Image (cartoon, rainbow, N blue to C red; front, side, top):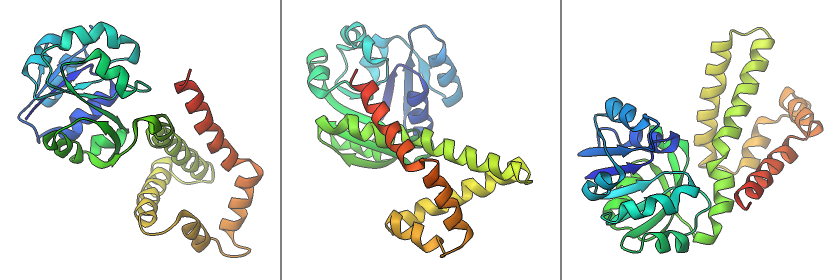
Amino acid sequence: MIVGFIGSGNMAAAMARGWAGELDSMLFSDSGSGRAAALAAELGGEALSNEEVAARADFVVLAVKPGMLDEVAPQLGAARRVVSILAAVPLARLREALPAAEVLRVMPNVGVEVRQGVMCVAGDGGSEVRAQLELLGHVVDLPDDQFDEATAIMGCAPAYLALAVEALADAGAAAGLDIELARELVVETTAGTAELLRERHPADVRKAVTSPGGSTEAGLEALDREGARAAFEAAVEASLARMRG
């Protein structure tokens, strides 16, 4: 299987690193940034033009800025299958720009780099393409008209969760722990909690940790006073507003 990347930015790089060692070859292009050559050198692929990538790849990951779709689409005439990760660009728009290709719309998050990502998918796509996506994590079929809402949750959430981890580790360091130790404790706790949340409802986990009159209760009360829940709700609303223009 040969996969081509039209655009070699952060999300394309995360997907490519997740696929490293699983594909026959990876092909990369960029608009002159040099990222394609850097990824090709890192992962053992080739840096080519958009036209060459489209002609040689079994499927193409379209990873340019959304505003570049009309500029890039004419260069992808040879592409048979296109996986678009363009934010806020619906299937109808993609099919209009790429009428000769099967188009699968995908919204991944950065966990794909370690094969623990979440990918929302809609549209066309053969079993081979979906099998390759499943190597990168959890695939969820979703109606095209729900992609913005899903992106605000699973696409943006890694940054919000990383901020929470960073804040907790910094607070631990301020309390006297070595910063690297504090970060290790929080990261490993986050990983274990994520696994637990696969089996139990978030409210149940929260209640299980919170003893009446205990230190966790005091911490949750402080979070409520500071408006933690409202802040996360505001983050989702802001992300949606930005995506919808």
